[in-house]
Image (cartoon, rainbow, N blue to C red; front, side, top):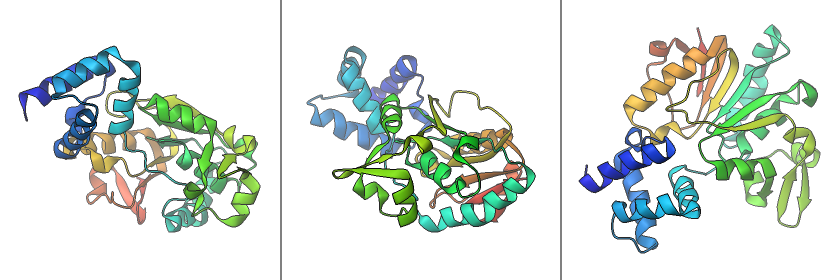
Length: 257
């Protein structure tokens, strides 16, 4: 690792609490180098000075290092499994579910969870915690306004019921917005609450090192109730689930023993 990048990691950790050394180095370094070169900087040292002194540049840096590719009902078949298999089992034990959408990006995921769960419960009984490290994406998530392309996989009945169209954009109804509470949270450095029935963390862990993943799987497992479910993205299969007290309930769904 170059000295320049090494020092950048140390400075960023002091400034933001984010530990870049827990992210895959080649990917992160490439992404950030292209960002600072585009802005006319020659090194990580110069770029850090800019981040330190300019809030807009800090926000842009946070946006770039958090990967915001999100849409409603992404990989629709998985959401069908959640709707038809996972939720019925969880609801047979309790009508009040404790749910966390971790690294929720711009909010499509937690809102999708609420829409799926609304098949079984009135929205007044649905409460979802959604967290992300990036305040910018949280602000956008709270606005709940999305481009048409984010809704490609949304079933037509759900689109009619829970969105209002405004030009090329769609707004999530207040009824669904009220079910989600957004908070800033750093997965790698901050503690997790416990007693969850369902934790959804998709398409984020692929960016972390094996050591960081190992730590997070353990933390997620400890946060779940026995019988609770951990739902991951379609490139994030856990190959040794028993190591974390998980068993595979379906593809990309892991049940806490």
